[in-house]
Length: 497
Image 1 (cartoon, helix red, strand yellow):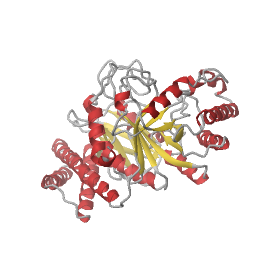
Image 2 (tube, one colour):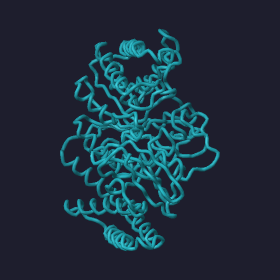
Image 3 (spheres, rainbow, N blue to C red):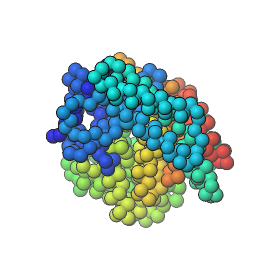
Image 4 (cartoon, rainbow, N blue to C red):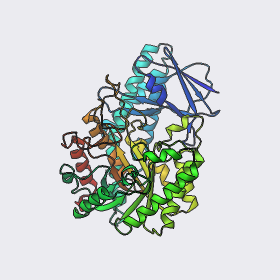
């Protein structure tokens, strides 16, 4: 396979975990099959690609929320190792300069300090690029350029969010936008205070494991009680996701048919029919499937994953359901495609559903951020905005499910708990969760194609998927991200408060 070789600066920390996260992206925005090796100060990527690729690398500092950085497009099979820090500085400066120019072309005002950062980042990068023969000096200058670019990009976030918000307002129509949380646990006294303005919707997940603990025996009590509580709050109801097939919701008896795909399809069809019979005309939206492109407890081939998705939708429609149907996809950047046995990117799954005209009315992107698999590594405002632009090409309304951890410590109630005893390189705290909300939520709320956003975990006290990703701590107290979330939503939707 073609190779890319980098020199790792002492200013950069590349861990073994990072080597499993680093990947290459082609000019078509799709992740390439990538194998990463590290030996001392050398990083070698074997990439299944002959043209230029961009390399995505985790970056963290003590002061900044972790983020995935990108190089510019690099030629494969380089004879002289690239300086990884210099290339990350080049990629960040290119994005910073491009976005600044776009603002100036659109006659948007930029702060003097933003333009000063652009000048400093450019000057430092130019000096770093011509001092390659003195690695220590080049690395120091590249680091200054990188940090200036990241600070400048942070300042541009508000400019872009405000401009996008004003453009939507000029359309003159009241914007229907769902803002809510996803309940995977029973309603409690701690949760009810969250279900007030500025939220206007709740997802209620009918866990297959709980609703059909034995084949043909159904228990809808918890779902019914939760839906009733939500309706009393005057909020819109979204039933789902109905099928995620992860360890959190897959019935134990379903594993008996792990190697019998036809029986699996039959079981799905029966459960879908029961759901329609039970909740027809009782909920506003039906969220039929989540994460089936990647995170399933039952192993499947890619064509089976797609076949299952279509079968779920057809089963619901075949039961006479005419309500709007939603489906969402895990790892929307497609990091899992670094594996040689994966060929369908998340957007390929979505595109096939749209082309099949099976009746999907909304497509979701699952932003479960974190530093430990199966979470998606942290992204910045402009990463999210660019991805939403890309998925908007499907021509279907989008929604987002969002989560992020507030601690690195063991979480006994989490299905994906890393059970670490030592602190990771990333700074993971309540501040990290709050800052992610601060940087990412405006990109979602102000995107014209997005019509809903849901925080996927409410309480850390109840069993959940991702560690410490709830809005309430184990004692039922709201985290600081709740205040920040409320503040941001009020900024962009004051008329709905």
